Amino acid sequence: MPTKEYKADVIIIGGGIAGISAAIELLNEGKSIVLLDRDHESELGGLARLSFGGMFFVDSPQQRRAGMKDNVDIALRDWHSVAGFGVDDILPKLWAEQFVNMCTSQVYNWLTKEHAIKFFPVVHWVERGLFKPGNSYPRFHIVWGTGQGLTDNLIKSMNGHSKSKQKLSQYFRHKAENLIVENNRVIGVDGIDEETNETFRAIGENVIVATGGMGGNIEKVREHWYKPWGEPPKTILNGSHIYALGDMHDEVEKLNGSVTHLDWHWHYAAGVRHPRPKWKDHGLSLVPPKSALWLNYKGERFGPQPLITAYDTRWTVEEICKQEKKYSWQVLNMKIMLKEFAISGSESNEALRDKKLLLFLKDTLFGNKKLVNDMINSPDFVTANSIEELVDKMNNLEGNNDVQINAIKESILKYDQQIDRGPKYHNDDQLRRIAHTRQYRGDKVRTCKFQKIFDSKALPLVAIRESILSRKTLGGIQTDLECKVLTKAINGNQEPIPGLYAIGEAAGFGGGGLHGKGVLEGTFLGASVLTARIAAKSINGKKL
Image (tube, rainbow, N blue to C red; front, side, top):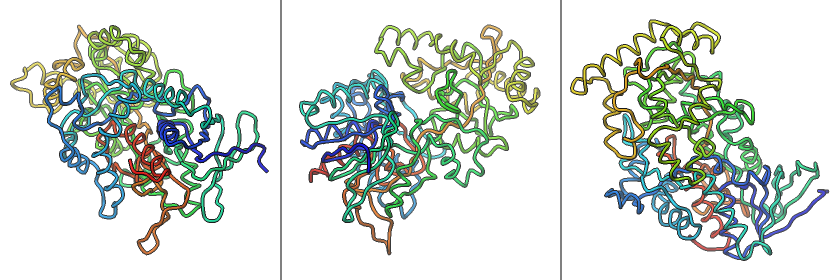
């Protein structure tokens, strides 16, 4: 028998943003809750706590103030453009429609009006689309305080709720292992307290799986690698959460639950090793400088279409994965580095995270020198004052002679010659896209105006070795539109598994994959909040 036993109306497995949001809504409904999380209490919030805090909204107050005429029809058309849904993806399509229709009214308004979340006034424009439409308007709203501020506010709302002392019990370092079924209903979970090594059992009328994806389990990422991309890269950095392991996906499958599209992942192309790693192959996701040259493992420029960030992340990953060796380099100089270099995540954006407005403005206008100095000495960065010295250091870093001096020189000098001709004669797609990017005020201040790479006034040269970075699992546990976990299809029919719900990334952000294969970005946090609220209402027999 288990050493410890907990009881409540609802058992929530996972204390990320989805689990926290569900707890808040369940407290609003008067339900008693046991919230189980495998991490330490100080890390409550999961991957959302570590995130940059960008959120996708449609027709937001920020958009309207900027004169954008965004609407659900345009946004849903953009969504389908990047999703690549198949004819059988009925639930993901329905979930996509539900999210796009409800993201502003049920997520933005809930966060701002009930939980004191504030958003930066300038909306960022990411995933604009390359060979197919992406975001027609900027929709990436940045939380003032990053993902850490977002989770801190929600935790404050949860713990400060008028019913929390009577209705909410939280247990940390608790690893959920086996779902319990009685009379064909899921009634709880068995597991182990990893702090004391004691076993536990948590029993409730309903169980919510909110354990995230499987991006932190690199072996599972390899097992479910998207086959059209060939073999997985030799190195995949872990930019997910240490406990995003996919173990509850396996448990749901044991109950004949439907788990779909596990080969739909949202990887990033520009991963670098953390200078102070907290786990094996701990990676950070760069926001790749637009004015840097993106080169393959030999030092050849990608082409004929050059790689550049902010247009199509999935296509960029695909292009790198077409190479014999599936990693890449970015080559730039210190002037570009200071103007454009950034890393996604709360840890690397101190001014925004800590709500220091003057420091944020200083970093925006003059570059984040603290971040640059921290990363320039990390394992994937080399600097040099000549192209020859740079190539030697790049090859020494990788331990081979793959980078060819002639390839690097050709890549740099041809690009610089284009800039020397002047804007009227630019015939390089990267330069055209830089010109396009700078037309939007949200990007102009952080993008150089046609900066050459080999410029004696901008030295040293910098080369960044970039690996594919695991981040999000787009597929997951399949649910209906109320977040009830569904059985595997038999003769085309699926039924809800009584007592079992899945939310957030564990559910593929809704329906086992509401994004499809591609993402308009900023949608992960909002979908986690929305699925949590819907599940909590459903448990109480209501609609959101």
